[in-house]
Image (cartoon, rainbow, N blue to C red; front, side, top):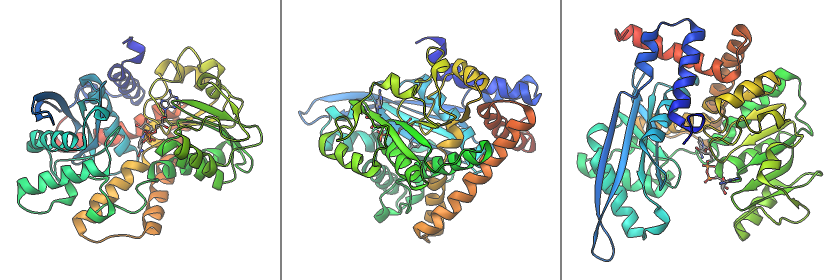
Length: 415
Ligand code: NAD
């Protein structure tokens, strides 16, 4: 992996840049450049054929100055320590940019879950959670779903932890099904938060959302709900894609109908009334708003100069490299960075944990009202920092969150 694409090197660069802009001395960077704690576990699992297979898993807790650690668990063959460490670091800043009292964490198992039976997946999930249990808990570290983990996996995690404790502990994980203490509104929270920040960004640059054109890369949970919500705000969705192909229509695409087509056929490709579009071309379309909602490192030094959107709302984690950021800033494109744009997910996870601790549950309307206030306040804080210091929005987001974490570390005597 090149230096430009190593996520841990990228996040360290982002921290350094923000610390320098804030005029902090090296001690702050020294405290933030590595996670506080990283656990590696080797998990033996009895497979259906009677053999034992050992899987490697990780849990990284980046910084707990403002509260317990929080972050998802990923099951993927490419999971590696640098990726988990980087994702845990981003979580610290994501939580603090929206002002929720958590530090960052992330976990993962190097596995292709599609190759496991349901029973093998359950045994692996439970064994992983038992292995990391000493450093997990509602007051210590609260995992959640990430790539290829879902509410069922969270239910197994919660059940395993509750058995270890001897009592029901719903607050140990978020992203649970509603029946086990999940929060209303969690399914579309990330996209909802992203849509709120895009709406605020449009106000700031004087873009009328009525008829504004949108391209969405990745039509999964974050991407499809973002398209639907932006369409409700008056935007015209002109292009969407997924891992199998893309669809483009100058006249606009019905985001619900194309979602139904994807559910029926497995892809957005071939949706009636649309033309095929390559992934590379979708990113470079002449649209008002671009929403990368799939993978890391899709906007790089190679294609940044060709991006024509006025606003980029990063629903995905890490879609833009630091080199590309510089080019986009010079071009005057307003990038709503991932740690802000997709923080709606962790915010509603926080609401889920709060409801679990209170044992009292909110309506979807209450959840969304609270989410909107948090996202709008966070956007304004970052935007004002961006204007005051004349820095790009990502640096401004890091500056606001690093300042919050640093203030907490100073008060605790860590600095
Ligand atoms: P998902 O699995 O539901 O959707 C991902 C989509 O991306 C799928 O439709 C897939 O086909 C598509 N995709 C994969 N490779 C692609 C490619 N090369 N080109 C175009 N599309 C491609 O995942 P998700 O939960 O929507 O997450 C998407 C991104 O958003 C990730 O970066 C994730 O970390 C981030 N995110 C999600 C949440 C959330 O709550 N869902 C929260 C924060 C951040």
